[in-house]
Image (tube, rainbow, N blue to C red):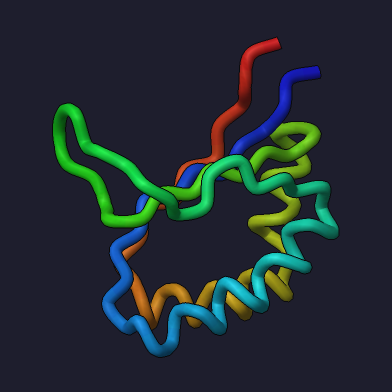
Length: 96
């Protein structure tokens, strides 16, 4: 079964508020089997445009990634990110 991924490109607009989102989202996503593959870190945009911060979260399946996204507890915490950052979030199925 292919794994599922949540991929985020984020530009933080409120550096004081954003850490609360990171602190609170982690246990919720991990309860759905999340493994953070990329979370910030050094990056270089080689073509096109992108946010300042990149996140790749691996899940056991596409369905698990969707369940994490749709978890009401996560959506409550996601409001912090929406207030503190501009984000593009994608859920994608990996290759088998």
